[in-house]
Image (cartoon, rainbow, N blue to C red; front, side, top):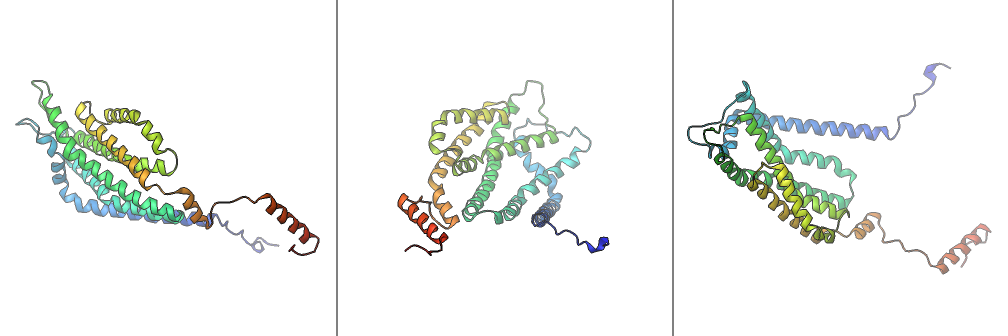
Length: 288
């Protein structure tokens, strides 16, 4: 018998779905990259204008006769394009989350799909709201405070690349902080915590919010408070939403399985079932 007589072993049934999932994941990642690149190319001609708008909260409070500086040789060219790339990702975020949703949705139950989609939409909106809150509320107050605290004889001239890193960190910090309601709702829906336990820990959560504000913001009481207070308010909103709209887990499990809660057999029913099985084994047919 030659080697050609031996048929190749059939592919495992588990490998084919795994490969198809990898192919689908690759296709969706390519779509995400393509969309981000297209948006970036559309924003690239306006990169300097975008940076001017981003620097507005700082330049409005800088002393007369001063301006931002570029320490690195290539930073005047690369920093605006870096900002354009970040803005492209921000703009494409709904499409990115939709691709993530389309990839995981087929593996979810019906009630899980009805939960995940609203959470994705609300988390995106909350992240945008957090970034907008940082730009329109926090930045004017923080930069107004920091520029006035400069020692006498020190000219405030911030490097453009360091300024971009600072504001992007603030955007990220406030965007993540505004996700508190989504995190609280998820914890309550999965049964990790309850509304009563969260309410009993409210003093510790308020202290933790101020600690997070101290870590994620510059060392001034204004920005710390402006991050900690919204986090506490959003925590209360998350507790309210989780308590009000949390679905009944038992009812969902019954709907998914197609039947209600399991009820054990009584002793008399068990004896009747055993008698019926014994009669069938003896060949006497089912008992009346």
